[in-house]
Image (tube, rainbow, N blue to C red; front, side):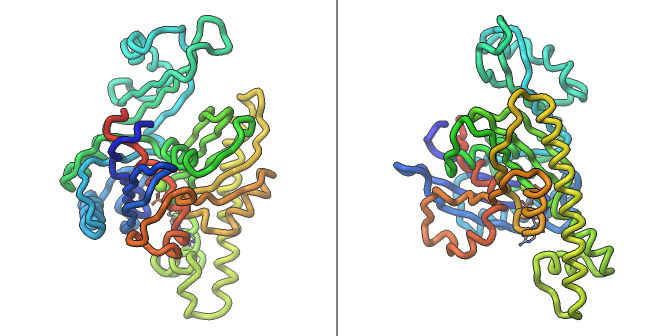
Length: 352
Ligand SMILES: Nc1ncnc2c1ncn2[C@@H]1O[C@H](COP(=O)(O)OP(=O)(O)OP(=O)(O)O)[C@@H](O)[C@H]1O
Ligand SMILES: [Mg+2]
């Protein structure tokens, strides 16, 4: 990765927008700015920007509050408008690949090829089959990418990198954790509406999948079960707002458990799919990111359901933190939510 001037990381999540500025140091990176602003629940639905004014306002507020002068921004997209696949192609040069990919990609993408932006990366020039090579294919719906870059432009900034959430989390993970290449680990980022799953084997991503589950379904379920407003339900989920009576927390606990089981089942289904398509399916550890990693019942249930040890990641683990940025207590309380944005802040404008 280029260690020149960094882009500003900007994670446009459905629960909140996060911003992060990193500066390379001798050993790692220094956190120069970090902030997040919550979004109203209907501003982003299913990855679509329903209320772009709210998003533009939040971005501008973050840049003003944290006095960020850099205009170049790295952002990311995720969900079912993004397809990530490892494919096998005849050996060719990067130039040849660039020319033929539009045509080659067609069979792997469930959308009209003209409706997507395509990005490719040669993973290794010699795959297990003779004369073939492994290529990582990323396709994202143009509509979605345009929506995300438009709000950034509207906020007066310049979108220079559009990544995908899974790979941003992976970049964050790589600067913070050292796992032996022989260990297969899974990074799972459980946000408000989307969960990104990324299996790393031999130090590279071998399987990714985004599933439409997340923290918002806990809030929805609490809202229904207790017949309270969305805000009250969210507060109950976060462990506050217990000014009613003592039976409430127990009911909340029950809902948290039920929804945790549902999400853990979905995660297991994806891991089963990975296992069915890979030779060495043993998973050594799961690392959890995303705000929903703050729900102890979910962490425990995923651990029990998958029979794999689970650890909640700390995206600031190896960063030097300037005391002006934020107090350590605040940073550690929101840490899992910063997984994507820290990964984005590692990107330099010159990266593709
Ligand atoms: N302390 C906490 N306890 C339980 N849930 C929490 C806590 N803090 C945050 N969350 C939940 O985490 C979710 C937000 O996580 P995150 O910031 O990773 O998502 P996002 O990036 O905004 O959304 P997405 O990527 O799904 O569009 C929300 O559902 C929020 O309620
Ligand atoms: Mg997110």
